[in-house]
Amino acid sequence: MGLGPTKQQPSESFPPPQSKRRRQCQSPALDMGTRNHLWLGAKRILTCYLVGLTISDRYATIVSVTGDSMHPTFTAASSSLRGDVVLAERSCLEKYQFSHGDIVMFKCPSDHRELFVKRLIALPGEWMFLPGSHDIIKIPEGHCWVEGDNAASSWDSRSFGPIPLGLIKGRVTHFIWPPSKIGRLDTKIPENRISPV
Amino acid sequence: MRGPWSLLRGSLTGALIGVTINDRYASFVTVHGSSMLPTLECHPAKDRALVSRLCLDTRFGFSRGDVVLFRSPTDHRELMVKRLLALPGDWIQVPSAKEIRQVPEGHCWVEGDNADVSWDSRCYGPIPLGLMQGRVTHIVWPLNRIGRVERKMPEGRVMQR
Image 1 (cartoon, rainbow over the protein chains, first blue to last red):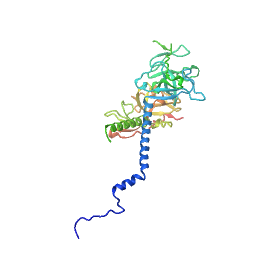
Image 2: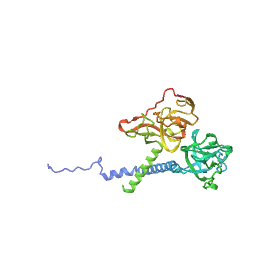
Image 3: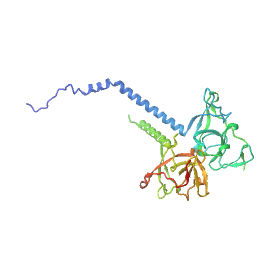
Image 4: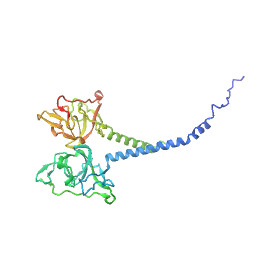
């Protein structure tokens, strides 16, 4: 009867650590690897989505044009394909770089869910000739006057008056579709509308 | 493998998530001016409030009596905080002009709680709902003023559509 240390034989219920690990990795080995891949893939997709959202909210977004109030600059949606697709940049909102003739995208003052695209005719503080009459109006502070190129079928400031600049959500700069029109938008500064006071 | 590259990636992702939350879900705003006394104060310390942007989705959950954040109609770079009193189609009594006006489609009427110093719809008229930037739900600073910002309507001024 010695008081020395006793040595226990490893039994079936306690396999040595190495083979246990190997067993765990071998049968669900594919699942572990696939799970990792799926997780990585999901993270990448989420990151791309967030980057896309942030760019769209703050820098530039892509808009499809409908309606013919801006004919001939923009062509309305045809039956086969949607209308012109354009790039609208948002950096103008912070730097306050609006100029005459810019085509701006703004929330409709009588329906905040709709976005309109029209040309900027007059900036705050300017005196402007009303179309079709000899009247001159002063654009109030913080507001602007927008009109569609196709005067006959455009619902714009001639109906709802000058709009607050806070409603503007972007400025259209480039065509993206159709391919024949891809490139920068030509600027067209409206003539004889601003009265030099 | 936690090197500096991994740390940079982690902080960029964190910043991206923060920016998205700020733009679309909730953000903080500091109160200047006393047009919303006593609900929101700026002396002795400027109140900081939590603004919820969830209401800007398609359901557009603004109710009469909410305190709202919107772009000033006279300076698009400025944000203003006032109480929303009337929604499109409502009739509102304007005390100073002794008249009753109807709020046009797509617009709303905002007034500050501190009527004497508030520059609001009584001066510049109803504002388009497209100017809305969020709804003030809670005050988060200073600590002794933490709490909900309650919905409140003045008596007998607004006739709902």
